[in-house]
Image (cartoon, protein in one colour):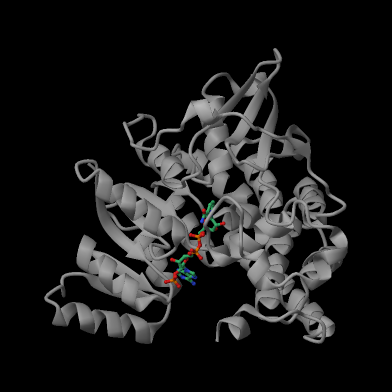
Length: 400
Ligand SMILES: NC(=O)c1ccc[n+]([C@@H]2O[C@H](COP(=O)([O-])OP(=O)(O)OC[C@H]3O[C@@H](n4cnc5c(N)ncnc54)[C@H](OP(=O)(O)O)[C@@H]3O)[C@@H](O)[C@H]2O)c1
């Protein structure tokens, strides 16, 4: 029985993880959950899974949840809140495996805490690898504990790498669907609305990652994540557009063999792989191989999607540059979703912050967090300068 804690249990990856746990009741037990602000879903999850510990972001939400749980006879579940709460979930002594699926930098401290506590981590939160991957992977090596990628591309690479040794790898090929604007002329980018950008062609995901997929920043983050997880330089990681998202990624070995992983586009499969590694267990997620007809590939267009180029540039330097890349993107994406900037202004904000960021190597999470705050300040100032004048209708306005 594997005992797991889930950081970000109410999100898309968190819910998929719980659905895997549901399907394999003899294999997994839920020990602790951390969510953000979705009190109702956190309550339902606590009722269903009866974790020993649950965390929410805000104190008042935690108090409300605690009261509802006590009133329902579930007072045995302890309720905590804030960063200390997510860290407690990550380090719960009864958990052996932690799924890191909080979105953005908010998941960094808890993910690092899980690694420091010697937990095996199933990593979905790529932003913490972008911001602090050098520090996190160094600690995991010290702990002799693996970080198992849940991100489908890195999960695919992890699977492909089992076919050879690291010094036999020539290149890692990360596939990219190309997002919803693969065939949209760049001249249209200034009028793209949040609603259009949230509409990913092949994956159903959270809001930030959906926008990052539309700008290809998500792929840029994945390049950095791959460098850090597999200890390779950016020049050994190639992005290739593959609109069907059937092949999740490939590894090219020095003898010319290329090993690819393909399967259904369902995040439950990489989650299951990470949760059961090094075993493989039977699942219903079969792929109809006879349907493999149209597999298209094309080089990624870094002129049309400058976020990918910015990510490669930041990856070469690391330290404060990758912290700034993530922080500026988080601010720019939020500003775009709120209708404050245009879609084509997202890379402008990020490029500006990267230019202003001095390259410095970082050796602690507190240094990462300080660099993150500074980059956010610069990005917010840039957003303010651009102003809401030209942005298309925000999602919030559209939904109300
Ligand atoms: N979705 C995918 O298919 C996919 C694929 C690969 C990688 N990823 C990565 O996985 C991570 C999660 O993505 P997602 O799509 O699942 O995102 P999501 O649906 O937006 O869920 C985010 C989760 O984080 C929680 N959260 C947000 N801020 C928090 C805070 N300050 N403290 C504690 N919890 C907080 C949210 O809680 P509330 O909802 O309760 O506020 C929610 O549970 C991201 O890093 C993403 O890049 C996702």
